[in-house]
Image (cartoon, rainbow, N blue to C red; front, side, top):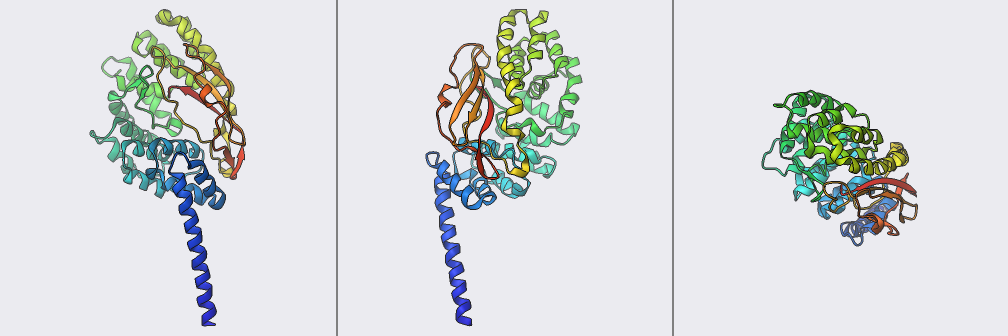
Length: 361
């Protein structure tokens, strides 16, 4: 009887060792860009949610831009179960880029994580501005004027330059930010002493299709440096109405042609927004397709190169459904067409999915 027990233990130990060896092989492939699809697929097939956890735990061991791709793919999942792993990624990150990726995912848990976790990064003046803004975004999931003020203060140093391709908000996910941030900052636009760069640039990041009054305030204040960004943000949120209002406004006469040219790009975003993968139900374990986001590169005279709707079929083949390049540089997204990647998944089964992208950012 004792021998049978020892034999069973030996068999179980052997099986565990084989499983661990298999996982290690998958991880070895996962962290290398050239084999990452094979590694991730093996983890999904063998471990499902356990595979997702393994991928998250490996973020700091893979290039930051690859980790960012996985972060975008996982942002529709219920991530609370992985909170300890995500927090460990933040604390053990090797670079500002890795900290930014960790914070982008943690932003969905802003209300459920101790604020001190984010505060020590947001309030650290020696930290990379991208990391500070990402940490402040996490804090602003909670409606607290203290956090809103801090965000605007940090953003005084923020740069969003479509011409050079620099975007200090690159790791900020505004999906879970309290609407109170926008409405708290809005009255500050009325006084020159409080209408700071930080206030305006934060509000521009949180624009929605109904932000007409905010746009009118910037136009009336002759904030011409922000006009191109206003056009770009209207495209990104798919607001034809904001652009039409700008085109008819006396303060925007000099860029009327640009504004009108942007309308088709905004209309494209509005058309495909209801069809995008982000609306998948969390109980189906939605995992997005894997491809490089945000789009890299430089804009055209301070404006976006364009917008596009990409489809990734169940086999992982990417195609461009529609694109708009209002300011020149057509074919911006053609390099994606025909490429093969990891298809989106529901219940760990591949499905067709659609994504909206703009370039740059």
